Amino acid sequence: DVATALSLGARERQEDTVVADFPLGAPMGFAVLSDGMGGHSCGDVASGIVATELFSELKLLSGAPEEMERNIGPVLQEAVEAANGCIQMYEQQNPDASGMGATLVAPVIFGARLYWVSVGDSPLYLWRAGRLYRLNEDHSYAAQIDLMQARGLMDADEARNHPDRSALISVLAGAEIAKVDCRAEPMTLQAGDIVLGPVTGCTPWLTKEWRRFCRIMRRLPVRRLAQHCWLRCTRRAVR
Image 1 (cartoon, rainbow, N blue to C red):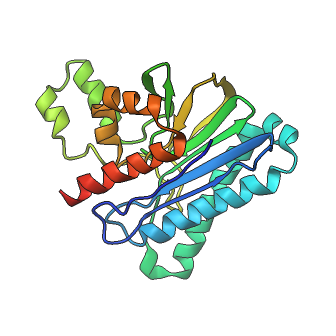
Image 2: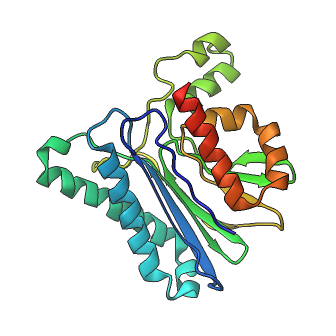
Image 3: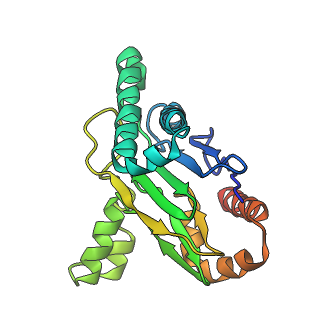
């Protein structure tokens, strides 16, 4: 089962874009989630460009799934580069859009084999046997700050309130991409696994309340689960 949902959150306009393609009976499927950089120029346009380009690139190759899977690493890397190139072209043609950018997370599933590509801080989670695991890299300073705290180089309060926690070290913005997390070796999914790709606005309550969230996941179908995530994000935004 597959389900998607979007919440406007506290923003004045929707800067997230999500597309999914899991045809009934098809041997593979994929989803693309892009989060426009909040506070930056044309974040909604940037996320739309990234999601549309990734979707187009992957959909074009999905007609030959066996060949696509054999070359999944280069396929995902090239799709990311193509999306980044589209942002660069848009900026060149629209000077007012200078500084636009977006994150990306795109899981691709062949049968029970999971691959992904991501840039930025948008997380990809796996729910398995009552536990929630983050799968992809976090391309934000938050991960580095937490590592410094773990090594005793920074205390907990300083780490928690650091002004650069939300700053990104890699993003699709038309320039050279600093880091790309591309899983080109298959991760085997098990019966009952759920793969989640929440935007960063949902991440704080999801990680803080993951035990309660896991209890909810045991009893809700996927579509109801997506609606629950949407409702929680919306309620947090209006508080």
